[in-house]
Image (cartoon, rainbow, N blue to C red; front, top):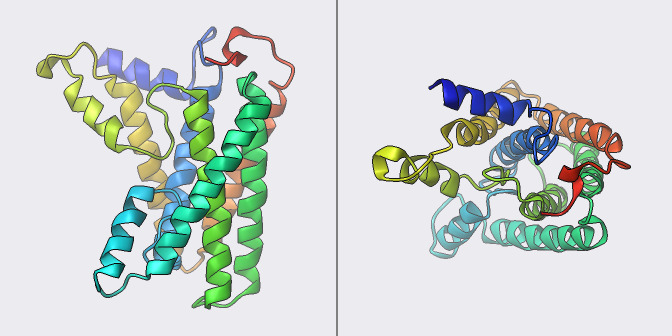
Length: 244
């Protein structure tokens, strides 16, 4: 257990000389962002996810199958905007991917602008949201999360995808020594799971308290923190900055 505890700690606070530099810490923050924005979208926008595309595909099938409480175009819009965000993420990777610090900085800055715009929109329109503001509140964070997912994929820090936990949870069990594997990487993988859980829990708490806009405010704050850290790595030539 001591090994797993150390592994978890070093995911949050990487040791000097870590091959991924500060990226693990920053990707943990982005995993919290995922929990926050999905709590907001599911609870406030009506059974739609902006980060979890598996959920949206299933919700779309439910809606088209006639199930009550699901809006087909909202789920479809979530998928389309995520795809657009992933495309933007690919363009950012093409332009800045040779330096992982700059890559994350640019992506997080774009994300922050998108979520900040969504935050402003929530202060300008009343709830329940009409179709026009609802579209905006799906599109803005949806593009941001597609961008985030593409960025995390390109940065390639093991077990820190920031949005997909299915394979992470599978690996905890399937890679364990009891199952015949070599290393479950329990510490690092549990940090990933716990981060998304924490984001969802905090987001739901603020929504239940009647201040859903605070969820987006916290999200913007986390993204700006990543941007601030990113500015310190802009000119870094350390080994971790090179594309893996």
